Amino acid sequence: MGETHVTTHEGRSATSPSPIVIEAASAPRRDHPALARLRSLRSPRRPRLWFEILLIAVSYWLYSLVRNAVPEQQAAALANADWIWSTEKALGLAFEETVNHAVNSVTWLIVSMNYYYATLHFVVTIGVLVWLFRRHPGRYAATRLVLFSTTAVALLGYYLYPLAPPRLMNGGHFIDTVLLHETWGSMASGDFKNMSNQYAAMPSMHIGWSLWCGLTIFALASAPWARILGLLYPTLTLVVIVATANHFWLDAVGGMVCLAFGYALSRAWYGSLPHRLPKWVPTGRGRLTGVRTTRLPRPGPGADALAPGTGPKTATEPAGATTAARRP
Image (cartoon, rainbow, N blue to C red; front, side):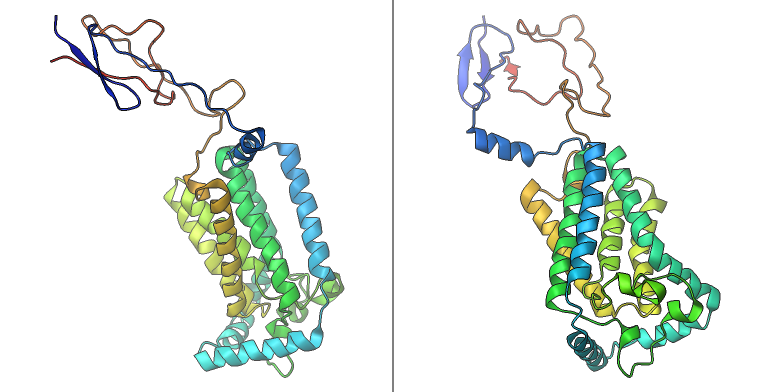
């Protein structure tokens, strides 16, 4: 009788007189409870709706409270605005005033941008969070961490670098489009100006949040038109924040830097960028949420027998330590 060479899961070669497939089992690894808990926290899990709603509500309340509690420091904010404007002129990229006046000459366009500035910043961001929650639960926590850490580091920027928006510059020729057209396109203009810190222009979270939305949609959406819209959204947002004189373009760069920090923190915690994590997460019954398991066909007559205790595997089972038999 010919010998069967078997390769075990450790990679060692052995000789077996029986022409069967051998499945090696390894002892389960036990970690210290603290390490096991840490691994659990860093593993993707299905989000809970009530917790996410509460977390978002409390987080935004704290963000608004801290942002508006930062001393406005008007003199420093105006001085910083003058420095930003001078720097952009030195670079030959001080185009905000031109865009502001050009778009303002088209009434329907600038009014639309005022409302865009006031609404889509929240509507699209919440919409992307809901979409992630429903369609990509395994990636939700990591992507949400990007958004939250981006916003948190922005608060540090508001405190350390107060900055007046272009429409509030001394001696500037920018048009406050909200005041002129009597719309409610900004919480920092008109009747709402006392409700928000007007000198928190750097970094721009309109860019930070819109770019987070755009990159998330581009990375995870399957429809080409959705991916294109994902890239267009932060681009149009940049035009809006400049046209309405609410931000310098360098404020947008600050928002991008904050977002880069958010992605770096999420990758460090989860070990991967959000879009590379599993789309679905295990449920309590050992199945993957939203994944349909397909049983593979049974082997036909004449196929090698399986070892006792091994049955046909399903398409979603992880690859085990099963070894293959090879006859000479």
